[in-house]
Amino acid sequence: MRTICLGLALLAAQLVAAQAGWLPVSREVERPYSAELSRPKHMAHTAIRPYRAKEIRAIDHGDSLRPVGVLAALDRWSGARNGRRFRWGPLLDAQGGMGLDSTSAFTHRIGGGAWLEGDIGDRLTLHASGQFWNEGLPRYLDSLARATQVSAGEGYAYRDGAGFNHHDWNAYASWDPGKYFNFTLGRGKNFFGEGHRSLFLSDEAAAYPFLRITTSVWRVRYVNLFTMMNDVRGAGGDPSRFGRKYTSMHYLSVNAHKRINLAVFEAIVWSQGDSLNPRGFDVNYLNPVIFYRPVEYNIGSPDNALLGFALSIKPGEHSLIYAQLMLDEFLMKEVRAGDGWYANKQAMQAGIVARDALGVKGLTLRGEWNMVRPFMYTHSDTRQNYAHQGQPLAHPYGSNFQEALGHVEWSRGRMLYAVRASMAWLGSDTTYSFGNNIFRPESDRPPVQGGGLRNYNFRIGGAQEYTLFHGELRAGWLVDPATATRVEASWISRARTMSTGDPFWEHAFRVGISCWFRDRHAEQEPRYTLN
Image 1 (cartoon, rainbow, N blue to C red):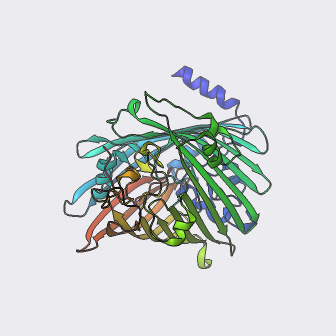
Image 2: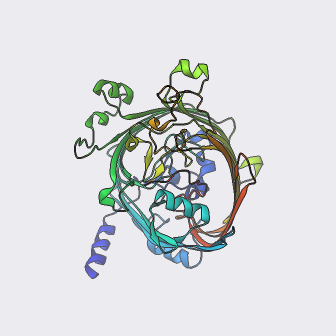
Image 3: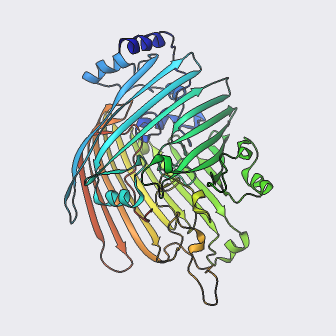
């Protein structure tokens, strides 16, 4: 132990001010800076997350909130927010509650971990963080964990009696070789989009290994993201048996004007193959510039390719209108015909967010609409679907739905009051696939008389439509801004209503210490079962 402490001390003696680090992908950690960061004068590329720590520090009043009491002394010692060269801190969760439905079961979330970070020179930052939880989930999340084998966004869920054990860890080495480039190698999450949801790449799924190359020149930011992801089906929780898949993504963001941002996104997903046809990482997709679809055609590949476009406009100092369009497959003549061709795979998003809204500092208002057609994000080879660790990489509902959501959040000093509500209209499969389950191949479509498979009349809500209401109330007091740890209470109400029949209501209450070092999304729905 003395040797370890001496080694850390020697390392700290060589470290200087932070330059190359990143914030965690957490709206709660970003909250104190988001209003200022999104103002037109900063010309920031706010759709690309995580954010650079040095860009956050450049914002006025970026460090206005600090820990208090005992945590203030810990902060001075650990250097979490005071410019120290080596920084660390605890990650704690301790919540209890009750799921108030027909079972009236007690729920809990007990977890612990830590984060640590250091800067070597002014160009290299090293980061590591990890948490472990034991959790008794509300009924709908318990059903999700049993159906998908994972805890939403936090890794494989190992059953422990009536609850689950799961863990998550992130790490990276971030290097700035010069003014215009950053190379980050690690394990974690990425997010592309201005919305609460992203139809490109969200943080809904668990962390994954990645190499990210970020190029920033003039008003342009260009991200190359290479990842390795898992298919947990049939592995029985044994990581050595997880199926491997790879993705290669580009995100090009251009500030055409201080109030207008245009972006293009593209992704390719391919499987590592199997023992008969091993493939591994395809070096063809290391090309950092060319569009992937031409590469695909050139190598005759059946891989899953997606293309997206984004637009955001800042009409005022604190408001933002944003939109996304994601394309998997489509033919324009079939789109114009409007006959519901199964291979017309599109997803669309439109939203508006206002920060410091109505002249009230700390008040955030958001309205958003998302629509994803049947069979979007799936693939004929389901090992190449747009998913990781049992969850979609984009919207948590997968495909075959539309959703409207609204948020009202008020941050006043250390207090946060939040009201969130969403209504979704979803379709569910029968024995055959109607485009709901992205882990089923397109060839599972229903047959037609005379042989063959049905090709038309696939619309949102087929074959069995139902609605899902999700509402959440939160109130909490901020303990540690560096990890967005709060003492808080929340109430969740959900209603699932089939096309015929009365709604089935679920309610869940919890209170305790909640750590938002990484975003957690309570809006989930078990729509499929993974074998």
